[in-house]
Length: 479
Image 1 (cartoon, rainbow, N blue to C red):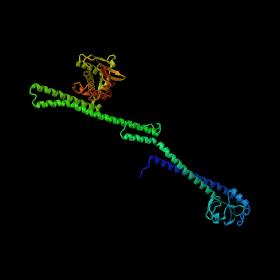
Image 2: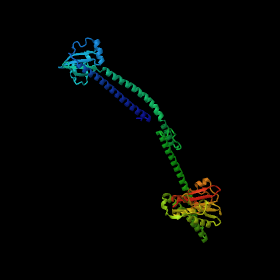
Image 3: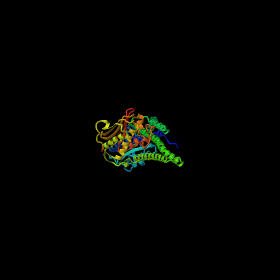
Image 4: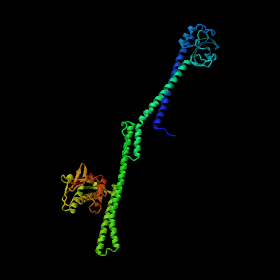
């Protein structure tokens, strides 16, 4: 069986609840009206019987109960009691009066009248011919020994209740139909945002992750909150898919770069060994030179492997690779100045505070000194490899805004914005035409430096512009 739509289910539920509410209201009104009419009629009957019971004299004869109907009928109708009966001490009907409009055959039977209690409690009696119901009250008389009974038919009360119920049914049915039609269109308009959301979800399912749910309602409404939540989720999904695609692309590039870096020394070693096996190396000097090249390429492979292993360890458990101890970055800065001068004696190297202002300042940190030396070695090696000989270099050390800073700034050619954005990527080289030797020129040095710095809860950042030099800044928490 085909399930109903949300719109139809909501409308059906609303219609059922409305029908139940109208039925309860109609039953409540009918019951209250019936109770009100009975209470009013019972009060009239009690009052009338109390008055008649106190009258002196004998009751009217049963053979001639109403000699003057033109006077009797208005009187009985005025008090709301169209039937009055007298019973003697034995319970026999000895007299009575009834309005002319009341047929004698519709009066209560004499046997029913004898069963009425004389305490003034109103009881319900059937008509002798079964055509209707009567309400009756009995009282003992004081002027003679007997009982007086006042009774009134319930035909008018029943007709009033019936008219009320039919009116309730007709008006309720009309109201139900009207509200159902109005609810159908109102629900259609109210659910229109959900259809928009459905179309958006279908577009996203087909692969268009840029789709967003439009602002269909104010933010404080349920639809508005749903739209905002869905848009937030869609944004996260789009970023997750983009990150996954970028990660896959980086992994492909990484595998390609690793393969390329490993292939060159392996081919060199393989070529040299094959040449030796073919007898192409006869002289001792040739053999020594071949072994030197093999050793050089093996050292290159070893350095590359160690760098890759270190990066993998820093990615998996960065804190586990550190042996922290109190130290000062001024020690590393002073050693870096001597290392640069040893690499290029013609290069002016100045040791200052951060930004080149003033003398070097204290920069106490709680760090792994050997790892930080590796960072600084990569930074000065990057300067030596990518700036012309004799280019001035400034090494700044101190604290800035509560952070320990060691910076290496050169006045070389600088980098473009695209190069600066990728300089910390693994295997990235701004100048791929340079001869490569060791892990630094393989494009891993700056990636290792940043990973080590971040393992210390710090970072390595770059400030550069084309033609304005470059400044690599190591930033660490102050101890």
